[in-house]
Image 1 (cartoon, rainbow, N blue to C red):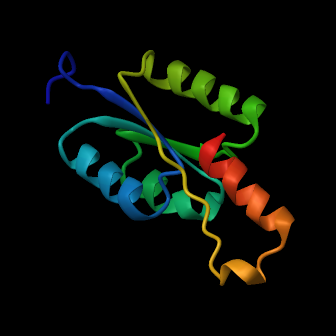
Image 2: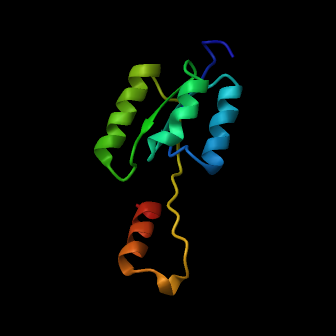
Length: 113
């Protein structure tokens, strides 16, 4: 893909699942990717394997200040963003009756707000 036609993608919590697959597909097509995850160890492969096509850093999407910093860093690196994929997930695996109200509220807040 030529420099003129390349697009920049900002993917929140691209560490696993669909977002991880999307990241790899985009890079293989020549797109530039900014990938974020809550745990920095999940981003090591991307930094090592694709140093010129992708940047990544740990971001907790529930912290607006950290998210704003991530956007600023992405714009500093690639000068623009063409697409934003905001689909982080929060897994809470157990029977409904076994969860505390606090844990249930955290999951709902994360997925909805």
